[in-house]
Image (cartoon, rainbow, N blue to C red; front, top):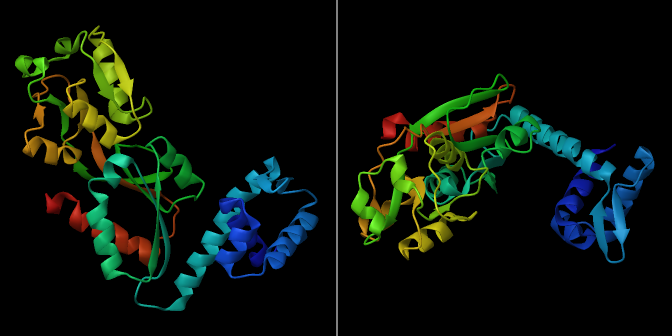
Length: 298
């Protein structure tokens, strides 16, 4: 297998289009097709299914993609390692949940791009359950997690800031009369929450279950912004990090209900694989994250 074959394969796999891959790579489409055919001949199996004008990865192609992405990343890291360039350059893949993508990361990414314009940033949004798997498979270089403190022998986890979690409802909602709030105060109350694979949602569910509390209807949304809009309209109560609620709380649209139940113990953490080579772009991100989000910034 040659690097250009793997690059062509990975590019086609991302776009599921030979024409778009050819445009991205600045190749003729026939050249991309030829690279894929040579790769399939060497492997002795098809990596794509041709379904009329559409294509899809075969099972073998899906397995190959994991290795191809790792090989291409390692090749890029090797190139940076021996280039001798003082200014970080290359590609940096970051995983993060939506809650951090809309709160702490925009300013960080903006400042990083200002300081290191030659680094291409790929931001991959997911849930905190995704990130360990992505890091172990080298799909991303680093993850920002908002979670209970992670302990893993394969991962290096650094707590940047302990997040204040807020149980909140719209100003004027009847539940505001119960503040400060204890778990029994949520009995029968309609809740609007993140999806069940979100860590702080799971912690709240466990706290309520342990207390024998049964809330009313529970609406699940994958979007933080959607949750806030529904809560502002008085349709229920939610639990979110303070950092994503600052504007609405300051404007008086939402009220901090003063949670008096068990501590959620949620923190924003910086996580990477213990064997990950700390490339200049990654080192620069780690340092900037500590500078802008870490304890010294608080």
